[in-house]
Image 1: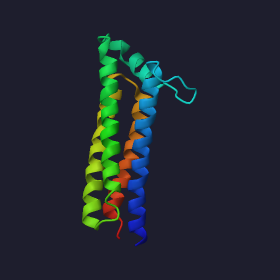
Image 2 (image 1 turned 90 degrees about the horizontal axis):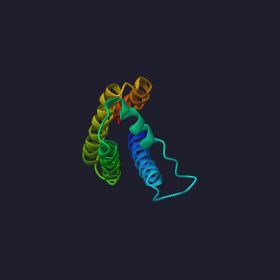
Image 3 (image 1 turned 120 degrees about the vertical axis):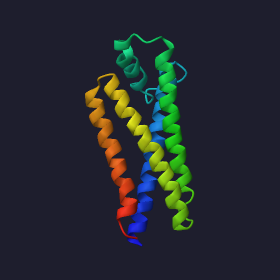
Image 4 (image 1 turned 90 degrees about the vertical axis):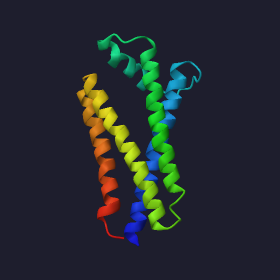
Length: 148
């Protein structure tokens, strides 16, 4: 029973992680485009993306398009974990199946970040994303390795 609570806690943790990530990216994007002007709405990600792509001389629309893809990936990860959380009071096979889907979606999202970081030669960011993605993968394994 204790490990079941721990496993469910991991799902709740990643729900919070992805939801907060989505929220901060949305708020940062709105701040960048002047829609939201608040001191608590910093905008580090979009300018960093623009700067990272300068080496390739991409069209002006490309950073915005890629930022929207990042938002879509964060939203998909967040919503899939929320969907898994809604099943935590149901039978184990139901919440585990939803958790598996959520983890696979978000780990694939991490893998795209690894490739993207390498393409723009942001090796310190590769390390950061690999630590976060590796931790999520470890949590995913814990669902299957730990006994109930």
